View 1 (cartoon, helix red, strand yellow):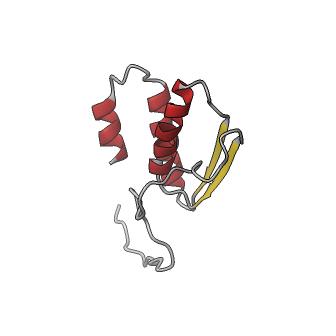
View 2: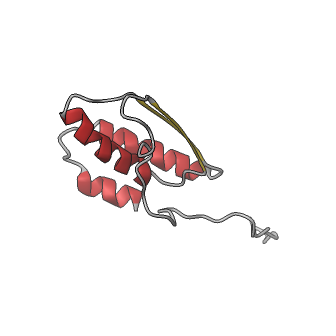
View 3: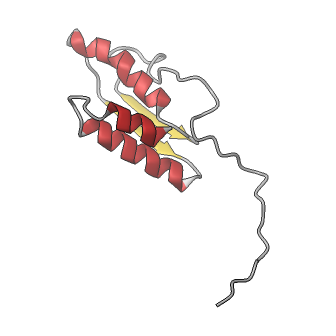
Length: 108
């Protein structure tokens, strides 16, 4: 059985940035400390800002001043959302940080 070559279409309108093209930011930096964080990330790309926000908020948690954070992520690339869900799930299911090297390889 022979396979035939078929034409393909190059999408010049969208870019694939697997690890982002901007620095991570704290998504709660402009909220007052008592405000709940409800965040919508459009074209979120990667989880660097989510992780950085969690790091920044961890200091608040140690002082007993924690807040509720709800982050919704959207991206046009389904593989990016799938990778991010897998990555965050693996982090949550590994509280003792045993799989750090595996996480690094999956993400990058």
